[in-house]
Amino acid sequence: MDSRLASLLTRLQTTGFTDLAGSESYTVVRLSERLLNEAVAAFVASSTVVRTVTLQPRASNQIDVQLKLAKPSFLPAFSISLHIDQQPQLPEHPELVLRMTGAGGLLRLAGPALESSGTLPHGIRLEGDRLRLDVRRILQQQGRAELLDYIDQLHVLSEESRLVLAVQLRVR
Image (tube, rainbow, N blue to C red; front, side, top):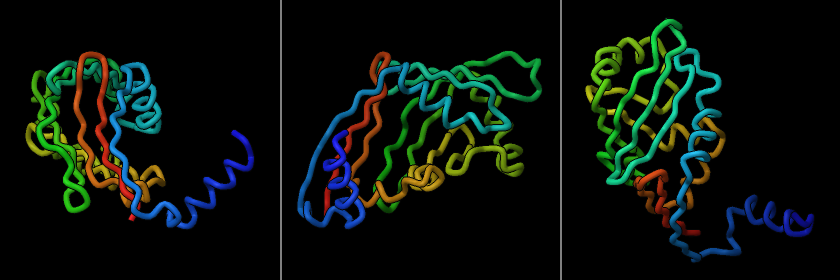
């Protein structure tokens, strides 16, 4: 990127984009299965509980998950199906809620133990057959919480082989 453009973008960011006040954008980003899994692998790389996670987005807001736990290492990978159950309502309720089916029952039983041991990543909770992802806490953990200052709406959807993010952005 040209250094002048990079400098301009840095200045805009440090001033909270005040020179763009009133601007709005609605965008739909379709993440390929490959890109999604690269991002997930980076997110779980430091996990002491999960060795690997592979996501396979399906049509109708369904996501198939292959999960391999780090301990005990002799356990085989198991499959879970997730259905997008509830969208984040920003800024008050920043949780994406996914309902587990399939082998999700195993995680449902392990949920309280995982929570109390602190082994789940910050911002992820298990409650019965629901997996709750707190977008705010996850972004804070990644040092990107300021992004929520510009997101009015976030909808997470899935279609065959793609995770779809529909985002409405606004500079106040």
